Structure formats: C-alpha cells, structure tokens
Image (cartoon, rainbow, N blue to C red; front, side, top):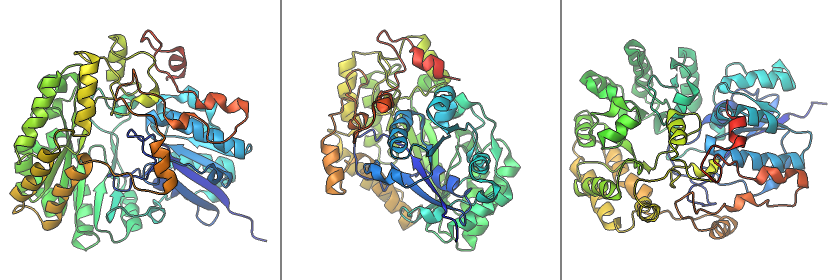
Length: 501
C-alpha cells in the first residue's frame, strides 16, 4: 500500500492593526513567503496547505490544526505572540506534531523561538530543505524550490517575483538593517523558475526590498530578463520598489519603460529633511513626490510612495500641513502607505528609542504595528493620539480625498494607460476611503466583539486573540501572555533582554 503523504500546514501569522477578522483580499503586496516555502516540499511525498492570516483572515477554526504533521510559521516580527498562540492550539490537538519558525521573528528573537518551537531557523526560505531532510529524509525535499503559486488564489491578476535579497542601504528603522545580511541577487535559474511557475498573469510585482541595488550591470540584466517575458506576452506590465538613488539617472527610467515597467514604489518616508536624517534615509533627502511623479510620467510609469509621520520629531500642525498640502495639489499622488515609525527589534531606531527613554511603558511586541503610538510624542499624548486616529481614517478629509483621487487620475491620464489611470484612482480610495468588513457572519461578529482601538499603546486593550478560543490545558496559559518589551517604568524587560540575539 502507498504510504500516506506527510501533511504540512504553512501559516503566515498576522495581527490585523484594524482588528478585523474578515479577509484582506486586496492588500498589495501579498505575503509570498508561504508559497516560496511550499515549493521546497516534494509534491509526491508531501501535501502542503497554506493559511495566510492577511489574505484568508485569522485562523478561527482551530480544528484545522488537527490535520498537519508539521506546522511552519512565518510572519513579521510583531506577530510573535500570534505564532505562540497558534502553536498552543496545534500542540494541544497534536502533541507529537512538529513546529517550525523562520523569517524575521526567528532572527529577532532566536533564543525565545528556540524554546517555543521545535525548529527555529534564521536563514532564508531555501534553508527549510535541511529541516525537511532531517524530519522526513532527502526524498521529501525539492532542491529546485519553484514557488507554489498554484496554492495562491490570484489577487487582481497579480503574481510576484523576487530577484534580489536584502538591501544595500541601512535605514535606521528597517529590519534588514538589524539583520545585517548582505545584498545579493538570485541566480538566473531561480528567476526563471519563478517566472515559469506563475504562468500567464495580468501583472507582476517584484518583491525585492531594493530592485535597483548597487550593481548596475546586474540591474540591467534582471530588467531585461523580465522585459523578455513581457515582450513575449506573459504579462501586461510589472512594477518594483527602488531606492531614491535610482532616480538620479534618467536612463534607468528609460530602461524600465522599454522593458514593460508600469509602476515604481519608492520610500519617500517624509517631506521633512530632519526626519529623513534621523532615519539615516540619505538616499531620499532629495526625493520630492511631485518631481518624481512628473519624471516617471514622462516614461509612462506610475509613481507610488510611503510616508511615515514621526511625532517624536514633528508636531501635529506640521504633519497636518503636509497631508493637507498633498490633498490641495492633485498632481502629487497620495501615499499608498501612511504610518507611524515602528521601532523594530534590533534596529538602530529601536536601540536609540530605548536608550533615550522614548518607548512607552508596558509595551507589547504586538503593539508595534505602525498604526498606534508606541513612542512618546513631543506634544501632549492625548492631542497626538486624537489627531492620529482621525488621520489614519481620513476623518474630516473624505471629500478632499475623493476630489484629489479623481483629479490626480485625470491630470496624468495622457501619460499612462487606462489600466494605470484606473489604479491611480482606486488605490487611494481603497486605502483611505474606509474599510468595509464583509465576510462570513462568524467573522463579522468576531470583528464586532473586538475592543475599541485607541491608537496608543498606553491605552489600547488586548485583542480577543489573547483569550483562548477553546479550553486548553493549564500548561498553555503562558502562550497567551503578551511578550512585553518594556517594564512599567519604560525600561527594557528582562524577558526581551534574554530573548534578543
């Protein structure tokens, strides 16, 4: 008789900052690590399933965890508590089951992860082959590791590609700076396998943290590899993330345009030079959103960017002035990302914030989601908190937002395609116009039961996930305690100091 396939569940753990239990289907980019990980399991020997708590919503039915022999966890650093909770449900249902964790969480908290999970790896996704071999034998691992895009339901016809790893800059707030790993390119074979695995799609988003990099010949080669697929009709266009130094050479834009690039994202981060210097964001000092939008439009490319509002450096009046200034000028796109700084564990920003007493007391790791204050602002907390709550929801700015979106898309319509104009119109309305939580009755009810957000770590109550959904043995109680980063006096907690690298 044929032996039963090994069962593996890969979970992208996530705490939704808006405390919604409904799936976030339209968030771009999607988490692709689970699907890249899945590619390293041999399909003949192993059945792999993926649960992405962003795309699918939080895993509410714990019976799903009765199925797998192995659960692999990944996610952003702030999701450690969520992985801890899910591991408790799994170990309760399957005491002999194996748990694996990797990615940013394992790199930021290696000692703690080694205590909680059976395997904790600090390497890249391909390092999972060593664990697969150790658990099941070498015949259960696929050395090529073509991503399992067949397991991912497409979002707006988009697929994803990674051509490089890490970044050649060292922004003070970036987790890549904390990890200190070298910038490197994928091999031709790896890039080709990814492109082959996605098949024909509407568009491709390159997931690289810095697509431009520090090797101009390699950059050109990668662009032309993608361009060749575009010319052959595999997709209608593609987009990538680049750093500010990319725009200093016009020939870079010409190269991308000739090879099918339709959109560029760059981390402008702030319109305040002092904030950029504080972030060690030297490559963005001269990044003016209007100038970059006009420059990209000359080549038929949409420009997109993110903004960080740092209330330790900026006043409410200054931030309001910048946002209202963008709303008043329809030529400038609204940022696709608007958040407060996240003092990610191990980064220079985190270390400086801890050293200078800026971290709030009793701070939980899960508070660091970019949607609430976790550092003391320079103005009274309640003033800033109230302003931030309104800003992130665009309260009082809805009409200006709608007017700006239509005028912006109309202004640049002659420079870009109809698809690009539609995206430029819909993106800000979807991002800031208000979230509609539509899902199953169970998920909508779960959302309604969540405590109200306050947008400040000082007053935000713990979310429902910290209460077990089912009865668990007492030994799992600690799995539902939040990982506190600071003590009541604001100093770093012993738990964190013991867990850090």
